[in-house]
Figure 1: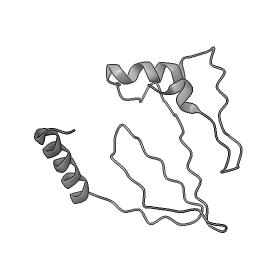
Figure 2: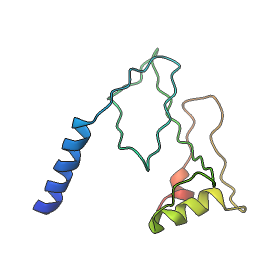
Figure 3: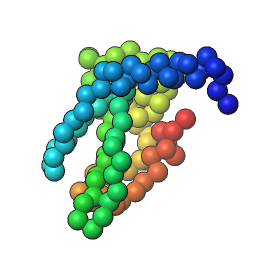
Figure 4: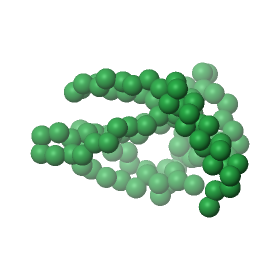
Length: 109
């Protein structure tokens, strides 16, 4: 259960997000790249049907020269993703939206 201070903080974040929101008008074929460390984002509700499917892909990209310094708790996950030469993780790179894999098994908390 949240304390009154925690609830107040979340309400404030929601107010700021709504005040400064940017709505993207997406069309078929559009790609959106979002830095989860730099922007608070959401997606509209969407239900797949026979003719309309949405394909969401998480990509882990890094440029060592331009990357932001990560807070300590995030650095371990970053090292597992980008600096683990012994990883056997196979990424879903096939153009098929219904493949699944358990990324959380290797890169989760």
